[in-house]
Image (cartoon, rainbow, N blue to C red; front, side, top):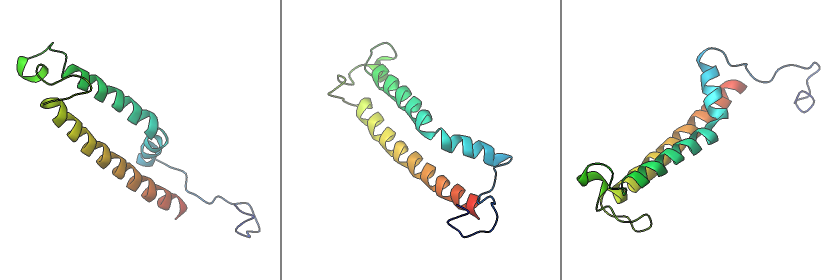
Length: 103
């Protein structure tokens, strides 16, 4: 980047993360594996809602895996909203973090 910016000497063009920014950097670097793990937990919760292994109200009469009813439909809607909000938050933090590094 130093050659592109026509600098005479080689210099850093970003800030090294310290303190809290190390945690932010870690979360941003591993955002996809973290979300994949959360998706696996979501699928297991979805399966549990139709398993008939818990309380009758929460785990029975929720339809099959491909034809959800009652709590499974609500679960899918809430998960979709939370997923969209989490990805939007991650992208906002990513933009702010890159801007902070380049400042």
